[in-house]
Length: 281
Image (tube, rainbow, N blue to C red; front, side, top):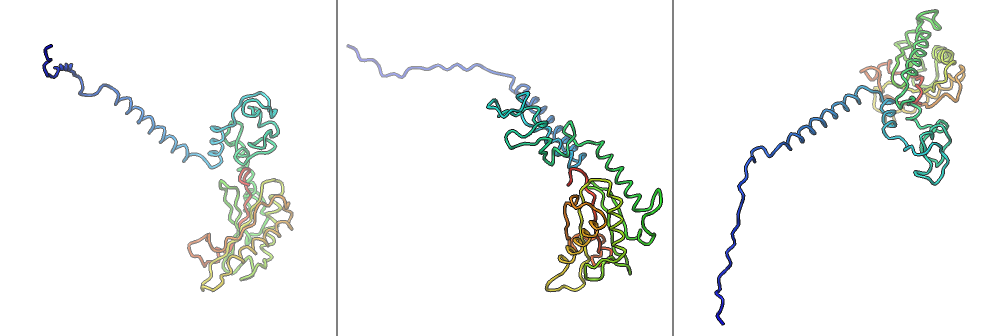
């Protein structure tokens, strides 16, 4: 038998020539279009966040993350998602979670029928606040306080509510220096605030502020003094007719939030009474 020659097999590899690799097709156009669309959505989101209030943002968050509707009734059954339904906001709680009309969360309280807070409710509150401002400042009718007392009052409407600020002026303090003993003027002002706000149900917040001390002391009394003055103002409001259940908080802010740049100015000695908006309580 003849031996086979020890020769490696010949492998022939044929490569087809290609072309048109210059732009790799149109895939980059699709990616670029997706990028531009994403950037447009991002800037729209930034604009929306800047153009809405805190309550509106809470309402929008509720709208885009609602309970999943599956049934027409809320029975607590063992059906999908434990019986949660599109009508659950009109019924009692079935599983101890979520919110209903009887057990509303803060964000649901601030939301309207579409998940965004009611513009009509806010406008109605603004009208009420305007009437109270006019009564306090003597506009549109007979003033409830003297011209001298008007010098101690500043009002402003904010997203939180109507802030009524009562403050010292040079030579006419609202409290005896260094104490929480109120002047007769402050008693009259707080009695008048209780009177003009008696017909609404909005919650009330009371804040006490004092000016900074000229000398650094080992124990700075500004916290105790501001808290004591806030508590005294709270008591005078209730004595003037404010219903106790309307009070939401009574806070001493010491000298941490001055009204003017000079932290030792008498103007920083003040009491702030805030009539809170619904949903801010």
